[in-house]
Amino acid sequence: MSDVQLYVYDLSKGLARSFGPMLGLSIEGVWHSAIVVHGKEIYFGQGIHVCDAGKTHLGAAEKVEQLGKTELPWEIIAEYLEDINERWSAEKYHLLEHNCNHFSAYLSEFLTGAGIPLYVSSVASQVAATPFGQMLSQQLAFNNGGATWVP
Image (tube, rainbow, N blue to C red; front, side):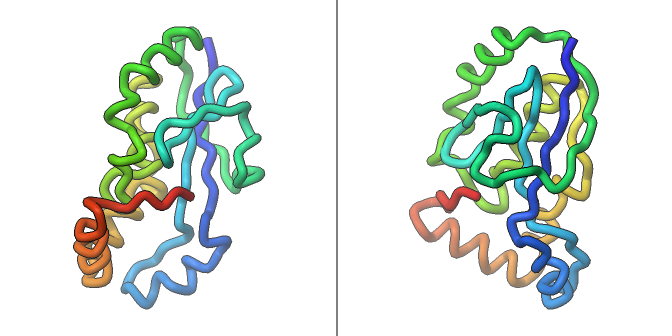
């Protein structure tokens, strides 16, 4: 049995608190998230990435959320990641509609049967619902069918 954790990073380094009101939102951060299980950190950007927990280019996680436990051994999880690799390819990345937080929620459901905290999973939909977010989403769709920016 292994603990399943969500590592949460604020890509805005605190600036989201200042910009949120301009969108009419109360946003604490621009969250990047990763699932940690069996000592491995799994995240989505330009495809699915796996590294030792805490060893990403983002440094230490700002928050660590306990999501639950899984009985799945690493070998089964690694096989599952290979199976879903096409669904989570770099070409499928979209800043608002198919990002690292969507991936974390998807993987958390597989591992624990539960999603991730709303403060992480809801930011993209909150932004997308604003006039700025709608404009951004249209622009991203216009540019090669989606964004490939990776946090």
